[in-house]
Amino acid sequence: MVDSTSQNSIPSKILNDPTNPGIEIALHCAVLGFRDQGDSQQFVEVLHPDGRFFDTSDANENAQFLSCLDQCYSMGKGGGDACEDVAGAFERAANWHWKGKARFMVLVTDNPSHGSDFHTFGADHFHDSRHNASNESRESFRRGFQRCIEGEIRLLHCTCNRT
Image 1 (cartoon, rainbow, N blue to C red):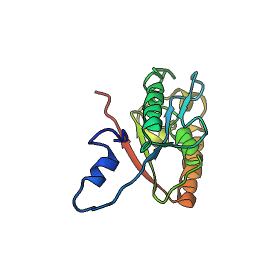
Image 2 (image 1 turned 120 degrees about the horizontal axis):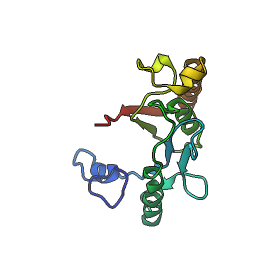
Image 3 (image 1 turned 180 degrees about the vertical axis):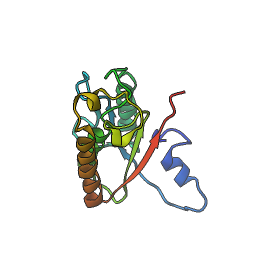
Image 4 (image 1 turned 135 degrees about the vertical axis):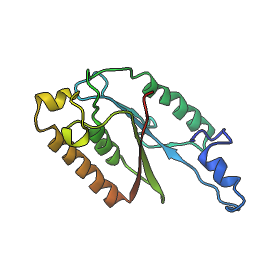
């Protein structure tokens, strides 16, 4: 989607779409890989070394971004339960320094957030040991959504089936 050298990238699809003559876009991307509270390396932030988003229309930055993205794939397993700190990761990413005219975040997860308000199964160690997990997750989501509203950041959320 973001590899500027690919014909399937978002910029290539827009540029080659006859209904969008002459429209060129540059994607500025970052990734926040996340696991669980208390896991080693809970967050892997893939940002440019200068602390900004990568400009994937620049060949060097595109290669750098794709290389850094591999960090997220190597995060492995952890936490000991099915839930993850989805709310905390969402809030953290919403508070990055967002620029550009069109800002959107894609939240992809294969597990729900902590707290029984967010799932119907019992495998949630944080909920079992800290009965306010739903409130904590709800507050993180609220702060993240508030930041998205203030920053005009659009959100796309999708889940992956693990099978």
